Image (cartoon, rainbow, N blue to C red; front, side, top):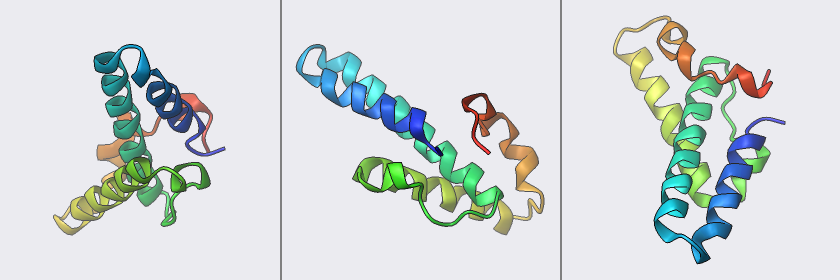
Amino acid sequence: MRSLPTRIRFFLAKSGLFCHVRAARHAMLIATMHAEADGMVDAVRGRHTPPFLLRGEPALRQAWRNGQHVAQCLRDCGHDNASTLLFPLQGDSHGRT
């Protein structure tokens, strides 16, 4: 499932807010950054709707949209092959296809 690791990270971070606020906020930021990277990769792959798992969490959904916007800006700025710029962000180690 697309973005499953991102959603799990965010959920675990959010549930940790009651214990260690600083660490939980940092973990939520990292999960949000992953959602943004997912949006960039999805834009390169031609996917223009957020993954189902990100739709239920407004912060992740917005981060994914931000990633789509960044990829579009790269294309508009003359980077015809934005996929070469985004290669390190693809996160294929999560098994996404």
